[in-house]
Length: 319
Ligand SMILES: [Zn+2]
Image: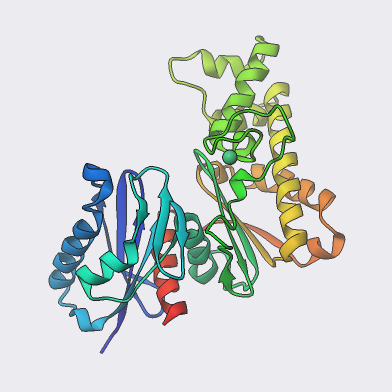
């Protein structure tokens, strides 16, 4: 009888769920809204009800489900599935694995959402099953996951692999959501790129960039890439700076863990080669030549499915 894994990627707006085969392909996927009432207390019940409904529709019995892997946006104790603190959900000291296990009867494994995305890309995406991999997600913020010797690094209390909060400006950098200043996220996220572009416009109001931002829409990171492709000096300088800092940070990480793959995802990664080529140049400048030789860059392939596929892999890895 065919067995399945369940992946649940819990985000601030929606919970993405999927029934996944043992081989790692998505059999069925769907979304439910994230219920913020009572500090997110009802989320495990919502997941359970929705899962049972979908399994019934698919004629899959609970006995065919091997386990559920869930991603939460925050700091997680992966040994116990205990969530210390979340970003967009009200959970604080929330015993997610225990509650979900009581409700579903399934083995439950929990990790940080960015770590799950890294595992998903490792297993079925552009990570190509690399045992040593760094995944960086450049979106509104900067997320990350580091896989070393086949397992994701969580550390002593769940902050391992928080690449976005590596300090890249020693003092006087822009404020970050985490409470520090000068984090990678303040530079290399879509938000950071737009902030730097707006500063450039102030310095040179005649730049092509200011044409983009003078429209009713707020400036986007994509428009900064577009302006640079059209030859705008300010936009090119902003992106040269961003890729230099990002390449340096990844090179420093790579010297620590010697990955064979570096997978770049998130909205900013849609720039493709326009991002990867300067990033690789910067990386090669800062990494040891031998570290560089071993390492390939790739754009993430799984998009929004990375988290649920990573959830399935987490179950597979732990059973
Ligand atoms: Zn930070």
